Image (cartoon, one colour):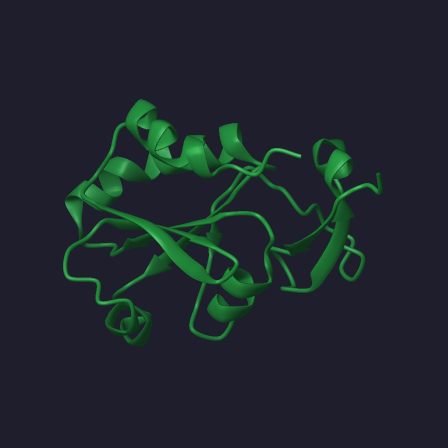
Length: 148
């Protein structure tokens, strides 16, 4: 049986990398910019790189639609960061500032923040509005993790 190959978009330069599933835990680097593909930090996305990260990652992408003035968003931010540490390399956690990226907020019909969405193969498969504690956040994401 051939080894599973996955596409993982670099959080630094947005290059699509092919990684063998069993190598995800080996701290792979980007073939283009040589920086780590998994940093334990949520990746900030903009309109310029959003579609590439959502559609070209074979990993589930968890998006936090937030705004800097939002109290619940700021309250949840440390939990989202810790979830990135805990769940990589089996999911990519990203953030979209709805204040700066209003066209993305409109495109995905974001009516309240924070709103979380999980995308797999470019399609939204789950959505959750409101701040979550770390345990609830991880339980919500867990069924969608990519396990090689």
